Length: 481
Image (cartoon, rainbow, N blue to C red; front, side, top):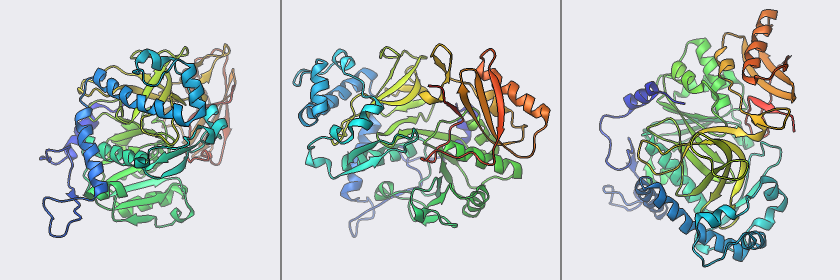
């Protein structure tokens, strides 16, 4: 995780004097009333964002017990609604002992069944509510990336989108980003019109933030275009902030490092969508001289956790989502233990997702020294398919840090694939033809993390390693069931 040096570097970039509310930097508030520039009078949409942000500024400091009590108040409304409008939940929740009108507590909650991803896929529209409060606004379908090859479709309302906008602004507030600067995003193409050789530029970071504050320009470039074009675009644009996924960032860093170049105006990097591999934070600091801040989210849920601005771990966004880290017996993990991530968005009344198992694993964290009562995730570990499988059926997480440190090996890109219990294939995109000694060095460094006696490591050279359909890339995949 991020070390003290990068925290000091980030602080050095921040202005000496900050506004008293939330640490908003360099931003002028938008006004919609003629003749009223200061104090500004923003639009109703902006006022909703500001109202929630103001409440979040307070609620983040609530004791954990009080935060959880408030979550149960909201969850009770969600469960009542689910029983009334979704036959699946009427059967499963009542069958597990939930009784509408009886105060919801931790014991009752723990008896409710976990919603598996396959169930959500198979039942699909049957999990959507027959109705929901009209005050939640219009509903639209959102599809997950389908990184497992099994995409998920969930209906969400305008209220869910509003909370997404507030959490986006909260992330910028926590990390004291200068909203007057430029934000460049490199991401896989989602629409044909995004694949332009000069990218896309607008006069704002996004619509939600711009409704409240006047921001600098926002820029988008397709991560599907060649790396050389991405580098050239960044050099032309010289952004203040860069947002991309970790695998794209790693390729950018290696290209900048080989050229001995930096982005002179850059103050920070924001990652999302993938796991942050070992060493990437340190490499970002070394090559670009700025800190990396990560966001844990998914398409069907929205924001799940943001990095703490003061300590190297994640805070669950408890005002909008309940997150549980459960062991193999579905018991809550203690700090330091790892388990699967089970989430419940508190405000999606269109497709209630009650105790939904994402397929991710994480390490539960202890209360944060910063004083926030928001729950802590120490690490995000990945999906079940990213675990090395042992002959007895158990799995373990591989520490790929030793491989990441062997940057002297002529690797442009790599991926480890467990093809059998005792076999790993290292798929390599080489910078040049390898020597026998280099191949032996790679086998040795891969065998260390695997730690399995008799495990064979083969090397397969590739011209390129394709990303998943979602645009994501995974360093390790197990093909063992």
